[in-house]
Amino acid sequence: MSHKTPAELRYSKSDEWLRIEGDEVVIGITDFAQDQLGDIVYLELPQVGDTVSPGDPFGAIESVKASSQLYAPLGGEIVAVNSDLESNQEPINQDPYGAGWLIRMRPSGAEEELLAAAAYIQHCEDRAH
Amino acid sequence: MLKRTPLYAKHVAMGARMVEFGGWEMPVQYSGIMAEHNAVRTSAGLFDISHMGRFMVRGSQALEFLQYVVTSDVEQIPLGQSSYGLLCNPDGGIIDDVFIYHVPDEYLVVVNASNRAKDWDWLQSHALSFDVELEDRSARWVMLALQGPAAEALLVQAEGSSADALGYLPFHGVALTSLFGVNVLIARTGYTGEDGFELFFDLDHAEYLWDALLALGAPGSVKPCGLGARDSLRFEPCLALYGHEISDTINPYEARLGWVVKLNKGDFVGREALAAIKAAGPQRRITGFELEGKGIARGDYPVHSVAGAPIGYVTTGMPAPTLGRPLGIALVPTPLSAEGSTFDVIVRERPVRARAVKMPFYKPRYKK
Image 1 (cartoon, rainbow over the protein chains, first blue to last red):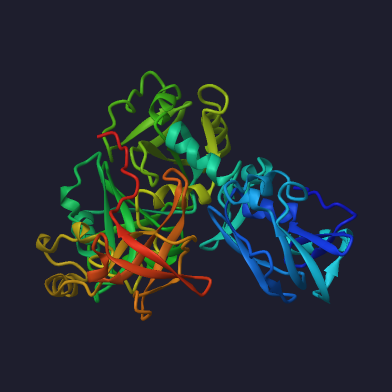
Image 2: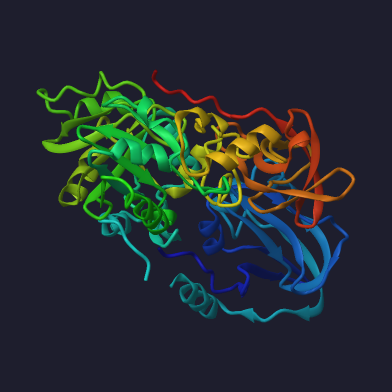
């Protein structure tokens, strides 16, 4: 099964994607991750103003079958969360890189090891077997 | 090395997602757990459950032997019927839950995939004292489940006109018939809370019958389903799953399966211990619950009293697809298993208030 992995994004080993927009970073979960989870039915996101350290859980995402923590790929302050997802999490499955975005952060510098698209695709394949 | 059913290649070719379950490489989902779950509640779904163990028991003392190793009263299963039973240890802990089918001259005992070897050894060790022969037919037979309110009407189309057994098959009935020209042992049993059938037949016909059953009715009438939907479908009517609601360290009274234990039928393994447990009353008990706070309970999450003391754990929890809200089953001290009791489920280190509710969450719609 092939998944979308846009070349312009960066990725964490825990399956979050990052898009740099000026001095802010938009974060969501990858197409691979949403496909592994299946139909998402529950989402827990941080509050605007919260600060997180790299590698910390910043929320949780759940499907019928599975529960998964969300990990901050970098440290910083939460400046926005996607509140449209509160009542309906379908966009995370349908459009994980667009309408399914999760949080917007102002990074403080510290970050986890981030991957380019090719390295992330390899990381997904390594776990498939 | 993971074991595979005769339909493994079929599942992979059809795009199922395969996972490990009880030592088997099985489809967890095809189109998605929600879609498959809903198909079984509203139309029909087809499951490959060939990973289950299927043992034949025959011989002049087949009945006496089964009476000795299971807790239920096997004498009450007439020819052409089947019934739920438990294998218990001498201390009353549950070795496995089984389904016993009374067919001509023998009994078919269906056991859980993860317990196949353990059950076989256990049954063999007791068989020595009886004039009885056990045969493991698990590898030779395929086992499929066609479940859902449309199952009967669809399956009748597959039945040869001379067979005509299906429409008359009562709840838990079992009979021989012919489906698409293949000899099939068919039973009106299942694990979904819906009307439906389980089919046993020679593995030579595995792919042929799988394809033929999926093609029944208008396109899409029968959805191929995986173990994910099997779990959510059994969870809503609160059907026990080994390793969750029942195990070696959980007895039938704790699991609310006292109705499967017939203390007056004569001697059987575990009887003495079970009589004592029943007389004293179980210390802890299975209860259904719903969360009053935000979150989803999952199996193995700790349960605390409202004062914060660890008192139990969640056996199964998930957002129930048909009920549309997160529900759970937990093992808690008996007083807290009463409807309306409150306790906390620890979700990612945070206590979330839960209230005990009536089981089952979903009333089964069996055809009686």
